[in-house]
Length: 426
Image 1 (cartoon, one colour):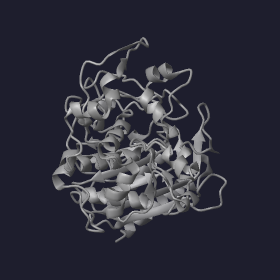
Image 2 (cartoon, helix red, strand yellow):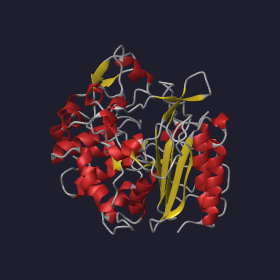
Image 3 (cartoon, helix red, strand yellow):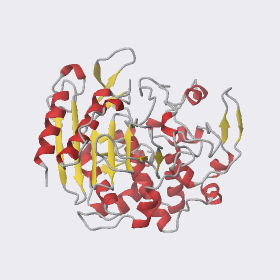
């Protein structure tokens, strides 16, 4: 049941941004659900794109980029439950992916050295295996040139070409780890990752609009992509960044698409939050009654996997490719600088947050400024979606914080209206 107080606050907040041309944010969609899977607030604000007359709707389809990672994590943990994958068996990793046994580590001087430690699926899912992203890591970006790396091209060759940037287990760094986890699943099961997701996640949850190969109907509802170019503040419409899955029509073309566990899905926020609702309920959908994960598996996913790195998200992320991301001095600032956590494919804010979110809330994002959170302590989850580059857009992040806070405030949690301005990436 929609909470009218939350709904009104969300509408006012979102419309204030999309209605102000100076923000450059054409449209936003926000959805929050409770443990019953029903909407607390849901609003589509603005237009599909700058200059477009078509309204943004709750059925608008977004490229969700790294919001895919949680879905890939669920898929891998389902395979663990079925005995097809092991979290801690490095020998299985090398049997399925011999490339990972031989992969070298890129040094600061551009040379490659042997890795000293073994890689496990758990390390891949917790971003401690040693891989990076070229848009966050200048060393990796430079190493890939003059050709360059491009993980947003639906081509497995970029993944296969990348060296490690750290010795396995030596630090946390965000990168192509979940892509490799997806490759492991495909080789262990003989199923393409998207096919697995459709059969074991989407169909049980009754979801028809989350897919790595968007249907013709989904393509018709696609949001425009926008860009703020380095050095300028005004946004403009640009070509879609992740085009290949949208262009593939024949089966031969579709077969060439890499099923990226790190960034490959398209979807609608109203359906994505239904996956989160299942996590709120220990792996069982409150809507369909289907169980996609066992309770003990969900518990494992929400346990901190990187206790040895309590400040991992304070190490800062540079804007190696400023057209794709702003620099991020800290991923989720919190008063008092509590220890930070990372579960199996998502960050954990281990202490209660300024918006009113509870302890051990999971959250993550997509590079075109999409953000989700899943608060199992208080039984609330939600998502805000845009399609604008670079990552860390202050207007979208501000709305994420404001709308999340509005939901908790409407539900009666004290302190939920506290400012979230710290989250804006400068």
